[in-house]
Length: 319
Image 1 (tube, rainbow, N blue to C red):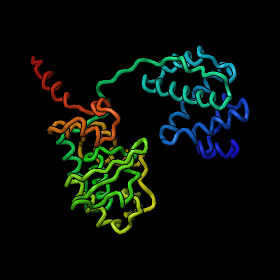
Image 2 (spheres, helix red, strand yellow):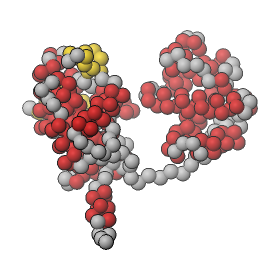
Image 3 (cartoon, one colour):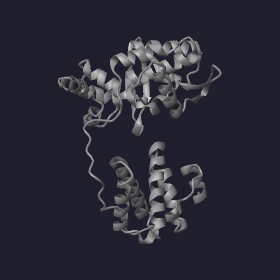
Image 4 (cartoon, rainbow, N blue to C red):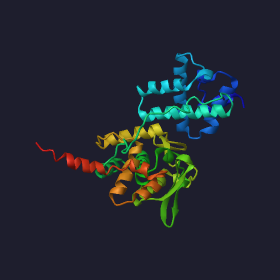
């Protein structure tokens, strides 16, 4: 397979960044890094953007692949710290370091110039994702008009993310067959990051929303169809799952219609679900298992129970 074919597969026809045009081997190894080494499409997209920006920065300084040194990578990191958030800068450094490691093992360059470069320190104890209150969540679900199919679909999708803590990417991958009956209850099968498969029983409200959506849409008889497909003029396209960008737009529209002022995203339902579960006596380790997190510390970033404490305390300031 030549570099042109790898390019077409690896980045949907994107141009090879100038820094890696040094040789055919460098270009081939570059595309192999994105097609062979990185499986997650979101990571692939983010890393490609990061190394492309690094390539542009090097080009402005007449640097070639052969003469990039640790001091240059460090200079790029200092430059990006003035423009980007610390987590994004750390992601850029990770992309550059991993790509150069790949080039070293492929004998394109002798040493990794990013190996010794340290990124900015960044410690987070509280996530930034917006969380809805219990009342706002009820209001949002109740405000959706379910007399039409699109309302049934949207209610079922939002319910899935809120009750199972599912990422929007996992929800969009679901087929009708990933909702099934076991022990007389509905269960869902979620394909999460890192190839993890999580199977969870449905909350009775989620089970009801999914049953009504599948029954009235006719999808219950199409096991291989997308569970949350696109719709056009009120008709379902079972072969085309809803795009993540469209999910975001739908959520904004539904929130505005419900009169909710909080700025939310699909990830807000993950944070809202985890917070509500913990508020009602749930265990952090179980929330971690449901969310598919590697560590309880990550799950803890979604725990916003302290928000209520902070609000109660600030109200003590009376004039």
